[in-house]
Image (cartoon, rainbow, N blue to C red; front, side):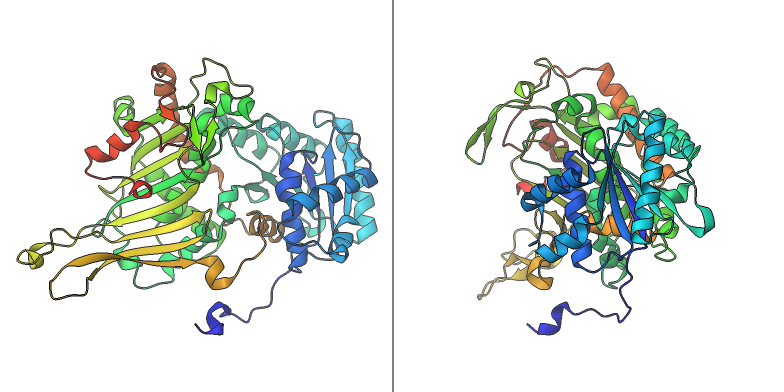
Length: 510
């Protein structure tokens, strides 16, 4: 293979992120040390951070600038996704500071304002502020209000102030609307970046290029040629130490209105008029609004929920969900959720989208499988060919990122017979591995103001409008069979039965 395979086709210079102070609320939490700091370090290694850049950690802990730097210096050895040279770490850690404060205390935000001024002066930064809310969801609204009250959300003299909000964004449609209303009292929509780390995956970003940049796929990306679409987000891990959070969320709330619906919208949207952020998000929003909202009766036949019991994962015993820390021994929280959706538009009429997500499943995989319709058999009726394999395209998102395409070919020999051929493309094999946490692209986009990969308020509310009726039915009819699947399996038998009624089966289990 030619060494030219991984070369770029553009000569555009790489744009560095805008000069800014990044404030991380909840800086002593796991997200900061596991993802955010390693991601920022990778951006620094790629020369995408400007000299005029600094990070302020904000938390209730008793750190000083120096002790917080010491803490991160220790943790980065475990969580860095690339070798950390002394020169790189020294450049970065000299730009790290800490402000102690309670996010419910207005005075703490005045101290933060003073510290931002001190840091800006030390590093020649002129007014750009990025606030990352790595805090519990109940604090999203209050933190934004405090930023507004302290004048930290203002944008004087052409500077910018942006707020990054982690999921989950609301618990249902009403709470999502209320949260949107609350934060929009302080911020303009262009200042709000609702982050979804799945959108940092290369394969997810590649969906748009794959669909609209290759003339052989877009003409067949519709109901005439596609039989159905499967989207799986499966994990082998349990809830681990997140039982307290998971008891209030469950698999449906935790994964579907954000991760899975983002994948649905990118897979199913119409071509945008450009790659400007709102042009792309307009089409995503149209797709989400076109999803048929299930009636209570339809919820009973188009959804499946499950909870894992004891089992085995990779040969090791795994406890039941009800035995996990901070989980009720009588819990009815679902750890598996499956939906059958219909998109009510011209492109996707009568094409079902099957979505599933779960904990303690048989394999860790996130993928989008496009199952094409079977070719007519008449041509082969007087041959040894007994059936024709359908064509299938799979976009692999994790753990390995890439694409695979299945098609039929003649088996060598004197008899006319066919067999399936699998063509695979893997990002690592073809382009090499870039150090990544999945957050680099998203943080960089926040710094340059590109909101393409972030959800708008209308997208959030459109997703919840589909999920809320399901939650209502599930709440009204508590499950009677939990736990109903073994750890290490592919979920409850009802999940397979749903597809079997339609004459289909899950790609991951073939």
